[in-house]
Amino acid sequence: MKRTTLLVFAIIATFTMPAFAEKIPVKLTPTVFLSTKYDEIEVGDLLDFKTLNDVYVEDKLYIKKDTKAVGTVDFVHNNGWGGDNAEIKIEKFALKNIDGKKITINYPIMINGNSETANGFKQVILANIFILIRGSEIYIEPSKINFNIFIEQ
Image (cartoon, rainbow, N blue to C red; front, top):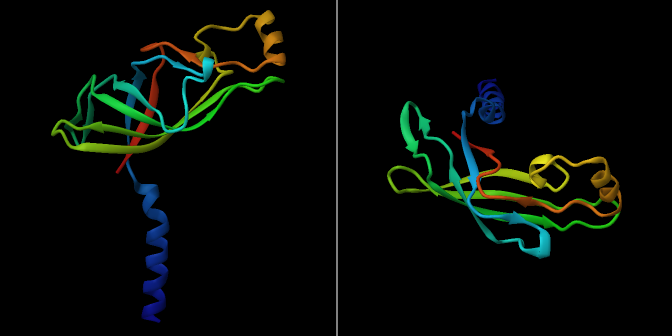
């Protein structure tokens, strides 16, 4: 009976641990142009970002504002016909904490060419008609959009 109780407790503890994980937000902005025009971004490319605010863990400064972060492109889909919009997925980010120790944050960002933020402007009716023919490209200027990723502890 003790073994069964211990086994059940171990299984429950294993599956509920992620529910108690703390998510610490890190706000990033690109420092380079992100564009799918002319097939500029490919899988495996490293894209530069910077943090927009100080990040604290347990009331201690963990990452300083304007810290360089490098995101690795995990997936790229160029735009196509029939409203097939471009997409970029960045899965892994590398940056350094205040002690100079390298941190890897695995938190996906998906950028879709149809979103207002990816285009940098609101689409008018004429542009929406064009999108039905050809999907939208992604074009983001440096420091024009923010992304939130999370450190899970």
